[in-house]
Amino acid sequence: MFYLSIRQLMSRKRQTILIGLGITLGTVVYITIAGIQLGFREYMVKNLLDNQPHMQIDANERDITLDGVTQSMFKDSEKVIWQIPPSGKREDNFILYPYYWIERLNQDPRVNGVSRQFSVSAIAVRGGIQRTFSLQGVDPEQHVRINTIQNDMVEGDFLALKGGGNRLVAGTQFLERLGAKVGENVMLSIGKGQPVPFKVVGSFDTGNDMDRRRAFSNIQSVQQLNLTPGRIGEIAVGLIDPDNAVEMAAEYSSGAMDEVQSWVDLNQSFLDMFTIQDVIRNFIIGSILVVSGVGIYNILTIMISQKRKEIAILRSVGYNSHEIVELFVIQGLILGVAGSLLGLIIGYGICLYLETIKLNMKGMGTRNAGLLISYDYKIYLQAFSLAFFSALIASYLPARAAGKLTPIDIIRSEES
Amino acid sequence: MKIEARNIIKTFKSGLSEVQVLKGIDVTIQSGEFISIVGKSGSGKSTLLYILSTLDQPTSGQVLFDGTDPFALNEDDLHMLRNQKIGFVFQFHHLLPELTALENVLLPPRKLNQHLQKQDEALELLASFGLADKAHRLPRHLSGGEQQRCALARALIMKPAILFADEPTGNLDSANGELVMELFEKVNREQKTTIVMVTHDPDFSKRADREVVLVDGVLDTSSL
Ligand SMILES: Nc1ncnc2c1ncn2[C@@H]1O[C@H](COP(=O)(O)OP(=O)(O)OP(=O)(O)O)[C@@H](O)[C@H]1O
Ligand SMILES: [Mg+2]
Image 1 (tube, rainbow over the protein chains, first blue to last red):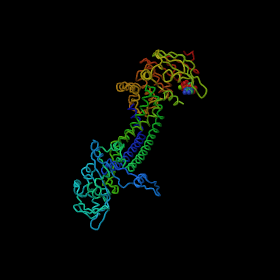
Image 2: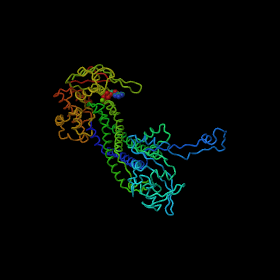
Image 3: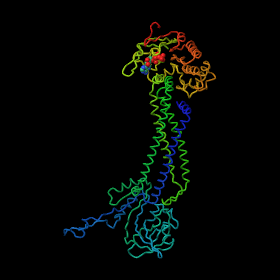
Image 4: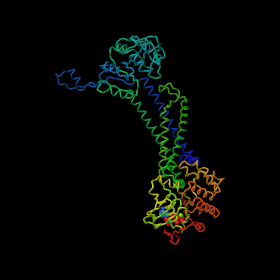
């Protein structure tokens, strides 16, 4: 039947090319849109994973409770009525038993690195210039395991923070704003206690705007500056496979006093944007499928009604109804396969071209000059199978109807 | 192949009423016999031919091919019977328009993947039908008579035991009709193919071994 299918397609070249091109167009659109969307997504997620812990343990915020305050201030001795009841958050928001977590995490084979963190907002003073910034205290050796900061170093080595001693690694833009250079000292204060000199031992540029007001130091130095030795704000965890994060966060959360969040939780609203993108993409795919499916369906239906006589001949010389179904389904599939293969190639070409277009995307924190395109083989597989299955269904339905016709039905209706 | 029809009745529903087109036909066609069916338009000739040739089922009654009822066969065997034992020629020389004359002739063996072995035979057959130089033409480049001869060649390529024809000369001028008729006679004589032919042409009808006359759905017994 393959042979006859080809012959029938060849004898209707214009129709064949038209449907084929419809399928090609659909495939091209799918590949381009998916390539752009997923390329952007891959880039953003990679950015996220490079700059953020895969999993983070924070102290749960503790509310001030009415009973708690009453109890501590008045004991049980008096009956207290508050005119304005006390409420709010406790200031001391820190992890109470960090070593429980660290020990447990260090024993977990899925964990790549565990860094204690303690951040404060600080004021840097140099000459007459003052800049507020976020001073992030980390475990330097662990931090470079779970973060790509080491690749972004412009001067110095991040590991120079090892061993404390009031050293600072700062964003290049931050240093510029402050008018400071690597190797110099800057005075840091946090609004209480005396300003303390920190030596700038390195600078980095991650391409992110946050670098304008960000610097790292050893956690011990930050704890001392803040006059809270031993205090840990959060524990940052790097995983060997970031895809395990959600599952592990759930595992570590159960029964914990502190809050364990995966990078997915931490960036929920950001990731929600991808869901919207998915909806849009699926909508487009759906439309393409419907349009090309209906196209194939219509044309085959018309063609089959024009081919009734021939179906009758084939049936009368002994071809059975399966063979008739085959005859038309093969035609649909040839169109589907050829059209979508062509679409894959053209779509790939368009993606390559789009990548060369220069875009100014600085604001998004990227240093990539072109559009970000994904060439994930799954996109191509999906595009192909979508085209293939829509062609299969669109040709099977009319073909099955043709297969059901008996020769005599056709001959009689042709006679009259 | 011997064909026996026993008490064939065929009714068609048209709207609420039923029309009985064949009203109990009994006929036996001997192996190698050339029989013609004649009768007025609407008398049921085509209906009878389709039933005799397995394309249609009778409302009641039975057709036996060498004693077996084709409708008792399973689907595959029925299709094989049509493919190998039965040839058809219709009034409107039905050829597939996208295939050449030769490819059309090779359609039945193609079902069994025997089209390559049968190729020489098909060319010979076409040549003997005066189509030697037209084997590679598409049907639309053939005249009506040539198309009908090509359709006949297709009906004969599997060397069927029996050939059914519904007004095979109906659409042809007398010269072409004569050509086709001579081919029928030749096949009947040389291959011993049983032929059942519906025709309106009294001259052609008389050249058959036996004429069966159909009058309003019953056989005119004087013709048997
Ligand atoms: N599917 C059908 N439904 C209803 N009536 C039918 C059907 N097929 C045939 N008939 C009727 O059966 C009768 C016999 O038809 P048939 O085609 O067998 O006649 P015929 O002898 O071959 O005529 P012609 O010489 O014109 O070909 C006609 O009256 C026709 O209208
Ligand atoms: Mg008729």
